[in-house]
Length: 246
Image 1 (cartoon, rainbow, N blue to C red):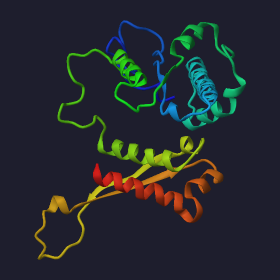
Image 2: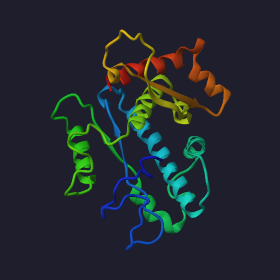
Image 3: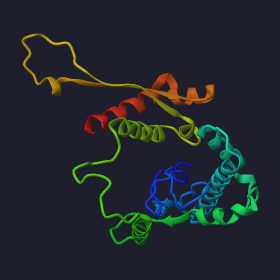
């Protein structure tokens, strides 16, 4: 969903959501690809084909949902869309439930699958991924991100990404996809200290981050907490280690 609706620039240099005076109608969906890594570890290879079939059907179901949303605009939460895909993707095939005027777009944005083991520098799969990224890159005379900047994300966005990664690493199946993050606090706090202390005030400040993880069901809440809160604590502690190095 996020790849298809990303706010990247199109070939005309317009960001998704920006008005293009020469275009009319809804913004086109973005084409995306699925990269399957470490394929050398999969045996027998028939399992790989089954995974491709499963992921491919989910991707097609996602496209169906977004095309339906374009024709029937309504406020629907991303989590609800994900739940719908998980429940229905195995029962849909081909152009089923696709409006005849959307068949061309459905075909155009269907994902390309790339396979790699990423073991050596000359891995053909790695070259395929790099080639795709270069092909999809938007030509530009100016860099969007300053050369001295490590990322174009804000500090809060970086925090969200780090915590999100730990959610995916510590939870499984559909659970991490249903977890929503809400920032409660992101503030530099000056700890109490004695008058005799002469440390640098800026370096001595503590960045306090409070973030809520919101789930929709009691069963997901139990899975996020884990036995005795161990899973949630693992998410917190591993995120803290990365945040300290960020």
